Length: 261
Ligand SMILES: Nc1ncnc2c1ncn2[C@@H]1O[C@H](COP(=O)(O)OP(=O)(O)OP(=O)(O)O)[C@@H](O)[C@H]1O
Image 1 (tube, rainbow, N blue to C red):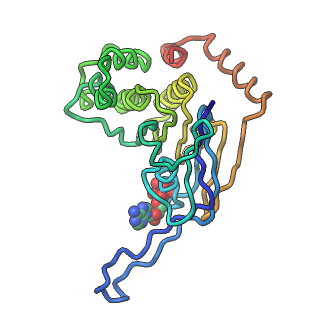
Image 2 (image 1 turned 90 degrees about the vertical axis):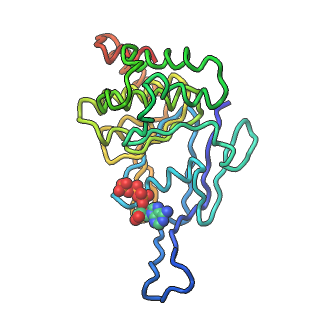
Image 3 (image 1 turned 135 degrees about the vertical axis):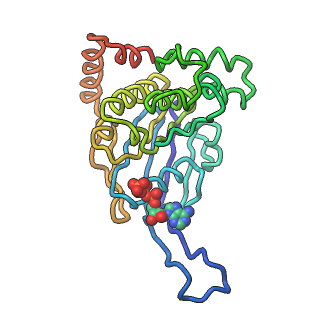
């Protein structure tokens, strides 16, 4: 049974971080990003969160992943009807960032193997090789991040995020550092790999092109989260499947990558 993340009545403010002995003039004002926000995320679905700069999109991503706590309200992880706090999500989430954040001293293969090694998986290297192949980088296994292009580094980051089969992937501007052609390729790979692995995908982005690939699109602005688009009905899913089939009919290198995920 798919699991889910739920935020209920959640507010996030960043308060006055100044110490008590500072004068009132030197204290910074409280910033309230959003109040009483509700959001439910399901495994296997894709979500995009858009909105103006500074609206709190990345902060919302941190709350959903359980890496940060809200000022008030509750976040829950619902797994097979068992409800717990979002702290219990830690081992089931993968992250993808705009800046890739690969370890510079490790090769592509060892960057991907790292999450498995940290979990004590003895097949870490062979599984990492399999994922290198999925993202089309078999021939770059021994190259370090500095020897890879931005698009190639993001492919490694996608493989690293998914290699341990997490239930949810959080991606903060995953194509923000890429040109339009690479951004399109990388987002196709990301969506296809998440779908194949039944991972929920939550993307924060300013790109309408990227957001439009998600099944559910939200806008966060002026402290309010609004659902602007949803493609959950059976008819829509059928349309998506047909579109995918049409795409894979004309297999170029990159479509083959997507299809192999
Ligand atoms: N830990 C923190 N302490 C104080 N202020 C913070 C903290 N984290 C975020 N903020 C502030 O909250 C606001 C929203 O930040 P956030 O990064 O979530 O916005 P965003 O919508 O993702 O913006 P962008 O699209 O520019 O990345 C910003 O003004 C930021 O400075």
